[in-house]
Each structure stands twice: as C-alpha cells, then as structure tokens.
Image 1 (cartoon, rainbow, N blue to C red):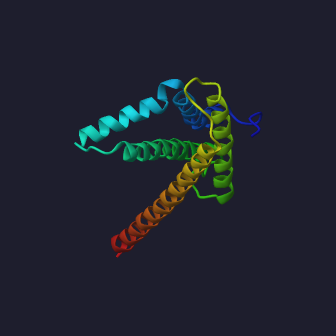
Image 2 (spheres, rainbow, N blue to C red):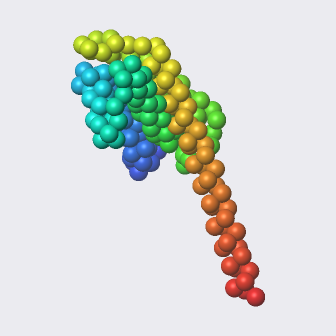
Image 3 (cartoon, rainbow, N blue to C red):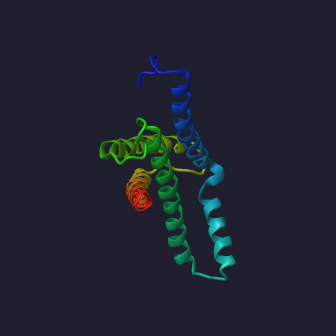
Length: 173
C-alpha cells in the first residue's frame, strides 16, 4: 500500500480500518497469557454449568472443557479474520473477493503461529500446531460470515432499489 500519494484523510481512514485488527491482535496476545490458561476456562465452564444447574462426570467435563477452549479459538480468529477482511482493500471493503479472503485466512494463520510460539514461553501454557489449525478454521468461518453477510447486503440493496423504482413508477403515473 503506497500512502505517499494518499491524502491525510485517506491515510486516517485506512488507519481506522486497521485499528480493530491491531487491537484484536493485542486481545489474542493477552488471552495467550497465563491468566487465560486452562484454569481460567475450566472455572468459566464450571460457573456456566452451575448456572444451568448441570452436573457432569469428570470425564465429560474434560471433553466439554476441551471443546470450550477450541470454541474460543474459533471465535477469536473468526473475529480476527473479519477485521482483517475489512481492513484490507479499497473503497469496496465489504464486496466479496475470494483472493482477499484467502489472504486473510493465511494472515490469520501466520499470526496464529506467532501466538503459539509466544505461548511456548508462558508458564502454564503450551504451544500446539493443532490450535493453529483450529485458529485457521475460525478465520475461515469468519470469511464464510463475510460472504453471507455480503450476499445479504447485496440482496437488501437490490430490494430497496427495486422498491424505489416501483415507487417512482407509481408516483409518476
């Protein structure tokens, strides 16, 4: 991206599109600290099950906890992918572009690798290439959301345009 010919307003707009990406990358990094390790997610899950008045065996709790943690990976990287998609590009940021979607998935995957590398040095945490796979699936889910949200937006725009055209026809009769 060559900002040398862009106006200060264009650079500011571009920065504002990238700001959520930067903030969310920080959130992901922070959630990879010791504070948000397995103990934290297990406590959350226990509170959630207690709220629902559910009791499960230790064996079942283990599988629920693993699923809960993987759901966290899906969610944080789906959001990251959506932010990346809207930050990359031109004036048509929400228009579907498969190449841009693939680039977002790959960028999210690269960031996931750095996050897992970071976790190698965090006491009580470990790195896992499997988690990178879940992160990339999450980023892919984010692209699916962008795709369908874009299709819905286009359909809503077409319906609104047709309604205005119909209104013009009946108003001019």
